[in-house]
Length: 253
Ligand code: GLN
Image 1 (tube, rainbow, N blue to C red):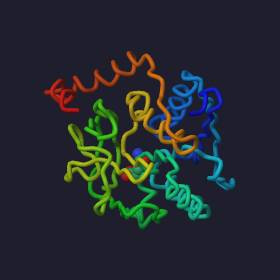
Image 2: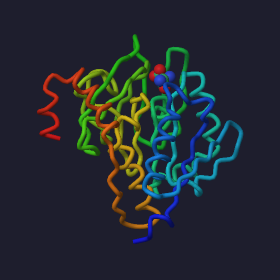
Image 3: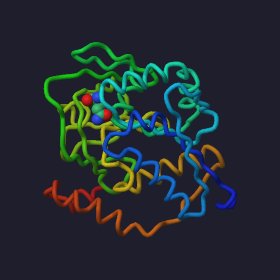
Image 4: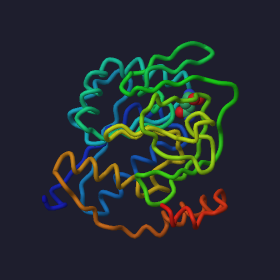
């Protein structure tokens, strides 16, 4: 196993000026910090509209949320690098895609104003329905031994076509407000509606992404434990507010 000080990850933040609803940028800061606290070097490369995107440089890719309009612009731009993005995902590249970014990974997002073409990287699709699904959300996810907490705000309802969900909804709406599931997991991709930002309040998910990125690059790793008392308190505050049987969820999880 390599020494930590030799390890380095590069985070590609796609369209940070366009897709940055509800502090998605905080997810990047969280990943960088949790690496640096462990002596793992982490750098961020921001890619704006019109700039070429070189996926071979990246260990983690972040696509944030945006309004329908911003999403359409980002999607059109990203189409040019679609094959590279696809190869990156199939080669177990790590992706965290939030809300508008999550929808863009799918085949399409049908809105009342028209169709927003997706990248078709995952076999999922989204349809706009009456009313927005807005509020705090709590999930039970296989990827975390703590409940995953966040905030959702989306008009689109996402359908998974048999793909694996990110979590089971314990409180909130999730993918479509009916299925009881939220988000998607495919290889090392997580797509989710959870803003907040997601990672500071869900340190296990942040470490999952870092670990997968390091494993892909360097082989098996074991991440040093951090003092997560503040992160756990933030997570717990949401759970206490929205889960009546919070303790029993922890026991099962
Ligand atoms: N525009 C999309 C929707 O409303 C995504 C919104 C978002 O990223 N918050 O469904």
